[in-house]
Image (cartoon, rainbow, N blue to C red; front, side):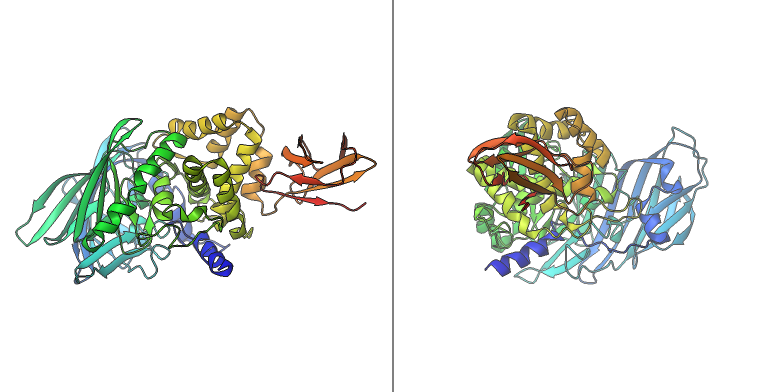
Length: 547
């Protein structure tokens, strides 16, 4: 059982509805074009998308158009759009004029004819078509899933965080810029339904035995959060009385799973109770909350969280913490919905800072358990996940080349935040910081620096050394100590020379706070005590040195 659970834990290290990136250390021109704010991206500010896609499940084929509205920040005559093969752009227009382009890998550089004056609001229409990449192991391997339900009807969905939204639609595929709003119009066979982000404005019956579902997103949305989920869905709903009023919660599931879903999805209100307490109001009241069944494990699509955990608690029925608490909740419902606060509300500016999404959301699982089962239970859960930490690479990746850090951003990141909470030693202060992050950076794209500076300011602590150690280093600090003639000497080892984290310990059964640095200190009289026990809530270890 232990081996099985460890396997699933390591499996999830690369997951949480995100992606597999190449872990290469040498980067090429394509990495730069994808991961950096190129000159052809920098001069225009994205305002609005209208994505129109017609889906042919039988041929596994899509065709459509994306209207891209933008504000000119500085004059320029070349604009970068991203679209990955085998899809192809067939036409690009501005003000009725056809435009030429130069293709370099997955980057399409569009030559504009109209003068781009600073402050102007312009738009282009990008037409495209083809058979998009099929997702082989979604969501780790991104693309489109073309499956069938129990009745043999098409069951289609996208999952593309790592590989990029440009795997199925043309866009400005960089996380630093988001549209302020978006209209998603998906055309499907008339016996099927599409569920996308935001609110359903209308359903259009077409003459060719198809229907078009028009969904409007009223909030900024990251590219990878845009989704289509196509199936013969059953629908049910509820109203949640939250901090900002009534939140519309809608659920779309395969018809054969309707009764199971009505029972399992009761956890949504429990999730909202916990996360509104800890993080503040759900960030997308205007767009509502949806949980949508899909043919893969799930993902944090904004206001349309996707679900495929088989209506079981845990991660596919497994407790990733081995504490018992992981079977008290459906991992996909809780974790992926947690991303509404950390990923969709607060979004990284660069994939290298993906820990902002995953560390906080990993810790949200602990906070969910704590909210419903007590502080001790929450701590046992997050501490239990430490066995899944690899300490193989730094948590922060390489900037400007679309490169994420170690999968330790999940479990190590969650335990880092749990450790930070111990240092603050004030649970209400900690809660105010988590809520403050979501209020201060509401619907914004942020950097690691901004998050670190905010937390340091709110705590009044110097934390550079702390974040450097846990985000940029792979070593886990060791509190070395020895006791001689009734005196305790101690220091931090296996860490950066600037590391100086205060830590709570028990000596002879009495609780003490120590403030070690990396030099030996001999300042504490411990009487007849012979050993020290470090508080297990700190992600570090203690080692007695034999004199």
